[in-house]
Picture 1: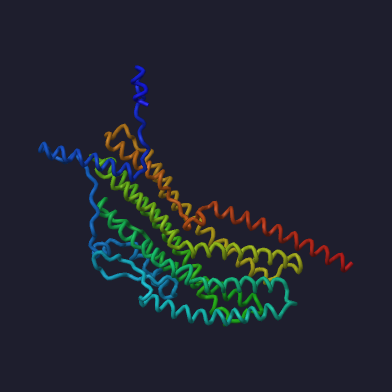
Picture 2: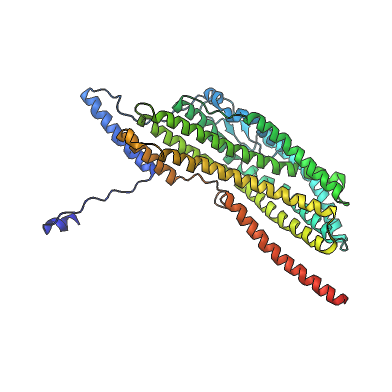
Length: 447
């Protein structure tokens, strides 16, 4: 194009600047700064004005442990998962070039999980056989009792999915834990201050206790509200309901930790902007933010199957329980049995609301709130290098949105709540239409 323009006496067009992603721009900036540094060294000048990104080094495992406050404050929930056999990850010895958290199929934690799972599965199979037998041999039961059987039989099947949904993703969970460990030490080396998680230690202990107390309360309420729900049935449902509660607690804790880390990073960035030569630190802050965004994505990737099963159980159970309670009220009026079905509905929708709402707040704190603070910076009061670093940080936020995604299956945010409610309403309308049509046919035959 330039040759064609010159041969005809015209002005050649200007070069089109290539569009680079954050990693390419980072590499280009580092190369340019490194060349400038070599020129200064050749002339014998000082190099204080040139900032070159630090090379990655192998961190001391003892230092990693000393600054891993997230692991220390949430250790109770991880130990509870090990005792329940849900996620048998383990802490490696402090050896260099060895990740602090690991997962091995031959570890003692996995052997214990297999033992607990075998005992639990034995009880689940016994209860499942009893429930299926009663469901098949009692066709004259009331409709609400049949709905109860369908719901609690479906809950028992979640036990058989545990090895596939949870254990198989153990290496991904270990990667997520190691990302938290490395991030906290990197944050300390960059900002000079650690990430503080206030009230996280008592909150984790409270959620561990509350998860089991709520499980016991729900199962005992069903025992008193259902005449055919025997007491020994509850021993099959205690660990299943507690596992669902613990996974909800795990999601809540991690989302709060993401918000705390983002707030600490933004505070450190504001302090750095007010100091001298802030461009020397903004590149490291950009790396910290990208690492935080990748951790949010890794959380959904590590627990994708477990939370995917979680959402399916909630969706199915809520539809069946709501339809059963409304149908029974239409047939026989409101009784205490319908109260039990409504308890199940509110419990499932409460779990879904907590997961989606916390994911929404975490994404907003890491993404929109952090971006808003960057846009509020007065760029006219800083030098050109700082302006360029702020622009590159905004580009990094735009190219790496902090989205909680279940490994491509679904985005976890408030939109998932409204989507589920709209689907549930559609299915309920269709089922109730069949119910009303059947009622009219029965009344006409009786008349």
